[in-house]
Image (cartoon, rainbow, N blue to C red; front, side):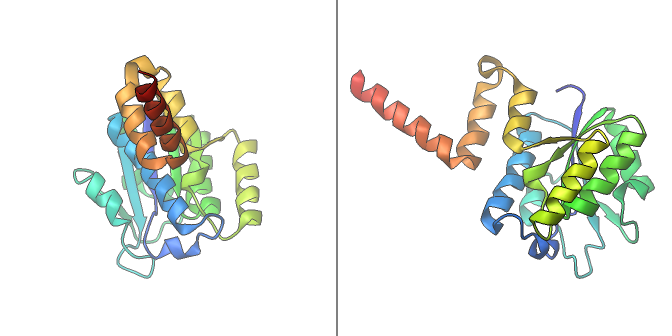
Length: 200
């Protein structure tokens, strides 16, 4: 965990309309779950947006509210965020070598910088359920391209568990995130607590 940074790339209001491989509510939940992981575990975060004053729109307001002290890197031409010197400098400034990336769209805004970071010696993890694109065909092609180049594909829950590793150490943080973003497990916990109370 001490070598991990979270990179949120182009989670913009206008671009969300392009995401068709996840339902809108589920996708937004996944993005915010990843953001909550960064916040709860106090991981460094780098946020970038592509021409936010244009049709791509501003970043998701929930992300901006969650990280008021993080300066957003606005790009005005670079398709690959890694080609932006300010973005690369922000990543380098974190001092971390394990980069968790997520963004819209998966095949461009995540894949391009992921491959570039791999070439520069970083260990890269793509948060696949916090990254969306046009359809499942495009999604799987992007996943295949990234994985063949050494990018590790993970979902937000596995990222949370791998970073925390032990409920005894990080239980409160893990529980808070799971209760907010994994309703199925929340129901399991409620049922267990009710059963425990009745048995007592």
